Image (cartoon, rainbow, N blue to C red; front, side, top):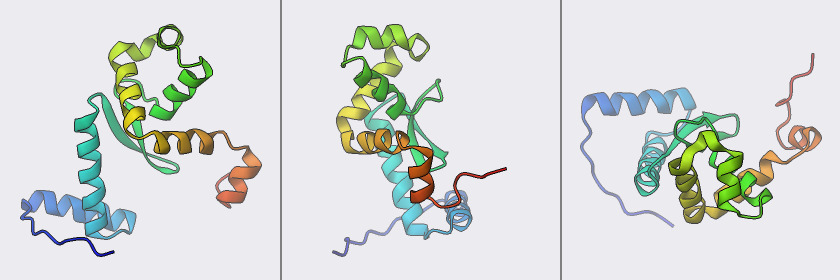
Length: 137
């Protein structure tokens, strides 16, 4: 299904940076722009979350920790969704970081559940899914 078209004037520096990202990632200008806008909206909806490049692509992370939201939520699930124990287990994340991760998970549960499943794969399963990912000496 075609999406409606909107015209948007971009500042020259902004346009140049998006073009640079598109070229570097071998993606279209429109695709990069849409992804950047979506990430910006998600960060606005879930303060304390940012996005970073990881081996499987962009990943939602908890600010100030380097932890992926999926890592915090995986631990939360292991602890049978006990927030007090989660705070005790991950004290360096802080109360605000934990709230941000839980809020993001409530907004985007499928994304996080998929990331948990993906990161639980064995090396053999990873190699089958992503040939050449694991380098051998």
